[in-house]
Length: 114
Image 1 (cartoon, helix red, strand yellow):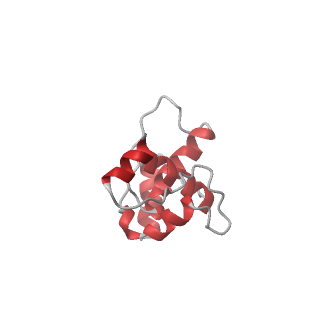
Image 2 (image 1 turned 90 degrees about the vertical axis):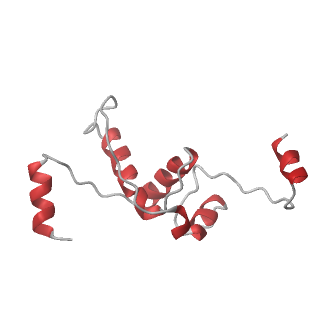
């Protein structure tokens, strides 16, 4: 990454740069996952940043924003599983969906869904 090009792009676009925590990234990732999109944690920085800027009033809730997700869920599946099991050190799994253990059969899936 070129620092000078980054600064030039931010200034040219009258943009904003924000820092996000691991907790904010994982919360954003859970939000993205719940919408049916599988993204790896680092890719969710853009969502975490946008959410933070909305809360700060820098981005109006009525504005449209594009956040680019570049990483696939399969890049870091252990993080996903450990988030939902509450096993990530220093991270509160606020939006966890606890995995359901079942046998691998259609009958078992139907039973869980009922």
